[in-house]
Image 1: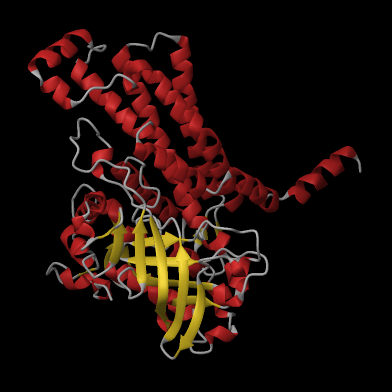
Image 2: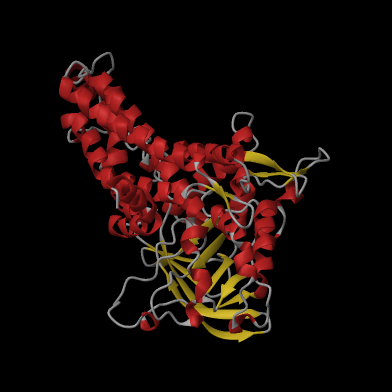
Amino acid sequence: MTTTEQPAAEHATATGKKVYLRTGDQFKQSLDDGRRIWVNGQEAANVASVPALSAGVDMLASIFDDQFSAEHSDVLTTYDAGLDATISAAWMVPTTIEELRRRRAVIEYTTMKSVGTYGRTFDLAPLITVGLKAYQPTFEKSSPEFARNNPNLAANITAYLEHGKRSNIVMAEVLADPQNDRSGPSGSTAGLLRIVSQEADGVRVSGAKSVGSIAAQADEIVFTNLLRPDFPPEACVWAALPVGTEGIKLISRPPVSKPGADPYDHPVAYRGEEADQFIVFDNVLIPNDRVFNVGDPELLQYYGRVCAWLHWHILTRLWYKAEIFVGAAQAVVDALGTARIPAVRAQVSELINYAQTLKAFIIAAEDGAFMTEGGVLCPDIPMLTSGRLHSIQNYPRIIHILQELCGQGLVMRFSKADFDNAETGALLDSLLPGHGISAQDKNRLMNFVWDLTSSGLAGRVELFENVNSTPAPLLHERIWAEYPRDMMAAKARKIAGL
């Protein structure tokens, strides 16, 4: 087991008050737990030994340290009355509109910290536990055959939420099944995660999950399956485990960031990335107290509702990321002196409109929030769905506009070494100055936009945004199902005299 089983309060300052927070170093140490990770065909001794992983860990560690800083502690920490302690704001459970907006401030911070390149930042997965808490009364009614060793699985939701608050953990959330032949029955899919045996201490599962973003860099994983027709009961599982649990194996995709690069050359990519892992469960024991659902297909139907706060997080992050795009676009226009060109102003206005529209969706979703059966305030779900659809349908065009505003600047970029060279640097400085900006600083700006829009990291992020927000065809189906069409039809019929 990982060291996350030890409460973070053990490391609190001697003020007499409970503080359930960890430092960056304590977070890093917790990852050295014997977890098994493969990168480029080689098993890593630990996370710190792989630059593509360790750079991202360093970024996450800086967030832990920011919890103690005067500048960020008001955003990153909160007082929990139930524990009478200071905890990470990532683990707060919103019950009022003020608390929901307070929680949104954490999303703004993590978006700016990661420059929007982390789709599953450290504060995303805790919202799964918020969603589970929101529908805990429904989970309490479940008593499937598989749960006979622990009939009150719903109590585990409360216990795990408290564990997260006390331990200040980073969680990875994973849903996707392995991509393979899906032409047969859903229960016959290769790699489907399922219960293979049960014992007094819990259930054992085998199978795999895919796109485990940030899993190798996290303390724990929360996972489930997406319900499909004719789904076998043994595949209906919802649980959370430490990454270092025996039998869990992580196979990373090839890295796409540039850890170790000069920040001038890669202002974003040098910071590392959230690595995606293929997660194999090889006869893994899930202890009874880590299971939230086992064997009940009805509970898997609640995945969409449980994940409403994740969808709110995703759309909020895209809003703040869109503001980064607007800022980058204006910086480019200023550097090139192109503000006088109407077509340029129109393109920047389109970026602004995208950001403003996403903001409007979030504000409307929060204003239309409702109280769930478990006493948690939930943003308006249909509004979030429409917002997510708008965000991904327009994202590729937004990227293209930002690229186009840069003109040849993204094609003709130069390294810091080119400017440091006495002969070539002098030529570049004299021949490539911008509008009120040096050639070297203008080039750095283009490197920044390259990392945001055109690099390998940017390509991965664009692909991820599409599937993470849910592809457009599925969102269209959700809008069809969620919107009160009958109510609108009744209004139309009344007006028409029908």
